[in-house]
Length: 141
Image (cartoon, rainbow, N blue to C red; front, side, top):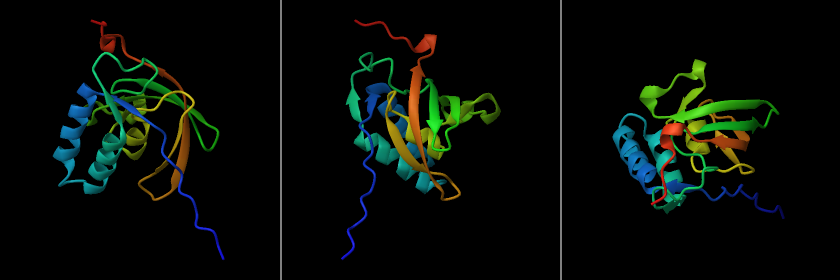
């Protein structure tokens, strides 16, 4: 008798309350135009540990973070996670509304995740480093 195939468990992720609310609104806004993308983003949001603003560790991927990751092909890439209007793939600015953008949110260095590209191929990436933009550095109160 064949053993059932285990599905890869997704790693634990963290979101600030601010990103949680912005991303929930974005998922709702694109639901009619791109339901599959909205559903995937909402699934990531729903499984996140939401923490107060200013308490997310600097090593966690947030909106505006620059991420260095290694793909399953062994290639290392550096991208910045942005909202759709700021996306520019040639500049390495990827939208949260792309499959890889959705996969990256909330991850920390050392974590890996599988994601499905728009062509249906399944990929895996591992986060190597995360850098926050200077403007996002929030003072602790």
